[in-house]
Length: 196
Image (cartoon, rainbow, N blue to C red):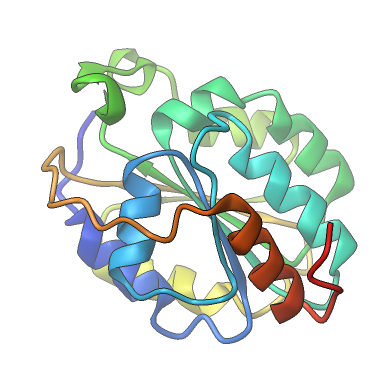
């Protein structure tokens, strides 16, 4: 179920006009792609919390309802955190966008086929949970439309997008790895005390 979008180019285009959006990036490739687009105090990579990116985005969107929140994650991580889509739909934060980079592979463990390559339809799952704005994106024009949605709250709640990307693995670009420093800088950028 792999697509043809260049993953790195798609993420760069998605982040180009992000404004004041907080970006939560999931384990592995999504974090490398967000880092390749440029480090920012409002980037928060999740290094070892597979399945947690979408719910972390939900918590932040609810705590900061005036601020756009973008989650960039992969199909493997979203499969692990699929149950979170029901809670996201129930809470319905209009300032939350979830972009799933779907190449049908578990990239971090050697490129084994993920369930999306075997018929699992994450867009259908999101719709079934009650998310109204669900997109399957296969073109850069679709990416650009999604990028315009990031800073604009959705009237019907969150946006969930499956980006059909190619299976290529570009060189890894690592963001800072000091969890305490990342937390402190993100809290400070949100106007909160940097302490825990």
